[in-house]
Image (tube, rainbow, N blue to C red):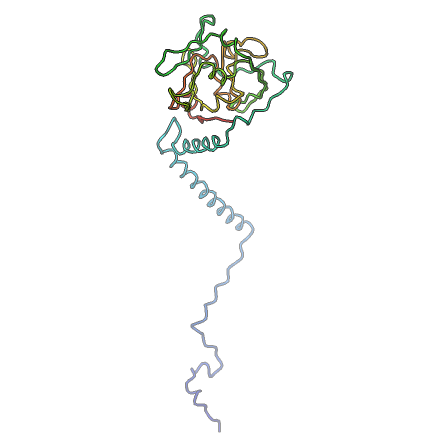
Length: 283
């Protein structure tokens, strides 16, 4: 006679008959998914790519919109101007009169020197009556003739003139060393002090073009007040009778037809900086 285990009495009836009992603690089996066709896979990947592309575009667009609503300083969003100012500080930290722009043999200088920009040159000028005007705080302006400048030692430079637009050209200029000019006429220092004014301003006689430059750059040994190009007097479109050649700056600072010069504690106005360009534009 068969005996019944007392534990069998506690087992569910279906287990006693060999039937499987579902375990509620086990995860339910996922329903079988049909494999996608190649066309469906391509469509799905394309949609994902477009979604990521859209997200990637929204982020920079949002940043750009934020930048454009920021206050402007000299026609640039303030954040951009702050970046340019930071770059200027870095450039000034390693600037040195020992670092010279490369020079070249005269035969490599361009015979047809490129003309770029006519701002400040459109008004007629009497070259015979022209005088370089040096404005001096608390004193009468100093007037210097071209003959007086030519009586000083002449300095020549053949270097690669670089335009901020991207072109460059090897050019030959000659004139008066700017630092020697400043020394001769005792300019640039504050009254009763050995401290230099930090900036120099220059403008054309008609005021149509003007630049502001840091004083260390104009005192660089390669900066000259030029009155000759390729051993000939300057032509009108190249800034006759006198122009600035400053190899440590891009061409926008090389003012043609200088009318007046002054030293300043504050940054002088600058034609292209007022139109959104970098004020420093150093090389």
